[in-house]
Structure formats: C-alpha cells, structure tokens
Image (cartoon, rainbow, N blue to C red; front, side, top):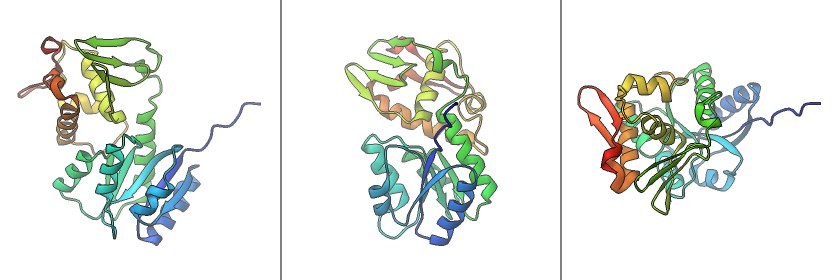
Length: 235
C-alpha cells in the first residue's frame, strides 16, 4: 500500500486568538497540520525544523513579526514566511519583503485568499516539473558556484544562504546569461503561482539578492527600461 504523504506543518503566529482559531480551523480542513503561537517569543520556542511555512502577524506585543523574520533569516533559517498585517501601504509591503518575507496579506483577509497564497508559496518551494529538480549540473562563474540540484550558492569557499525565492531568481538569470528578462517575465517564472505580485516586488528581491552576493553583486545587471540580466563577464 502506498504511504500517504505527511501533511505540511504550518506555524500560525498572531496575538489575536480569534484569528488564530479561524486560520487553524480552515487550514486544518485543507489538510494542513497546525501549530499556533500567540507571540513572536512563543513562536521561537515552538518553531521546529519540520514546519513548512509560517503565517506571521506583524504588529504584536513584544517582538514584532518583522523583527522575528529578520532574526530567523540572520540565523539562516529559510522557512517561508507569509506576513499577516493591518498595515497595507507599499512601504509596509516592501519592509516585509526586505526582511525575508515570501508573501504579504493585508487584514481583513478572506480565508480563500489565505489558503490560495499558502498553497502557492508551498508549491513554489517544491516546483513540480521544474528543470532544476532533475539537473545535477553546477553553474560556475569565476568565484561563484550555483548548484542547481542542491539549491546552494557558494562564493569562493563560503556558502551564501538564500531564500528559495532568491535562489530561483538567481538561477533563472544565471541559466540564461545572454537574455534580458523583463520584470513581468520574472514574475511569470518565479512567482507564477502567487497572485498580486508587483514589479516593485522584483526590484526589492533583486536588491536583497545583490546585497547577499557581496563582491559578485555586479553579476545582476539592470538594463534600464528593459529589466535584468546575468552579467557573467564581470566575474
């Protein structure tokens, strides 16, 4: 008999217990295994390696959701994070992405939207039929090495921690070094399962990726008015 796949585990972090209960009930009905935490501090205690995704409120007593996400990324924890927040300005959204968020949902939200975004982010982490899944090749450009199978980036002897979205963005450009990708094309390739992604989101992720590349940052080149390309000649 074929063994049933284990349900993805989601950690919900929100200091409003009513919201946690609503999300827990509906996501459990969709087949997810749910853990709730009512503060960022409690989330740090409950977060386990087998959690597949975190739904994270921004404004909480004590540590904020932004601070928790930033702390996780600095410790090289790359769990996908979807922010839940009543703050819905563009600057708030960009702050969420800049600290390592994978998606952003404004309150009040519909349960259908939350479920759709959770499934989209999880699907993006394990893209079915992706050419990267079967490839055992390593792309090497000077001191930069991109392992498409292990999903790892190394610069010299040092491994660089990237979120899954950042890695897919880098891999897309590096596998096609002679091509300029428009922002809309990048969205279609990297965020194809995620609704409501703007071109500004691409710019924020490029900025964050360049920062992590350090001395190799010029490899991600901007063609003004067109989009982005991978410039292997500078490496």
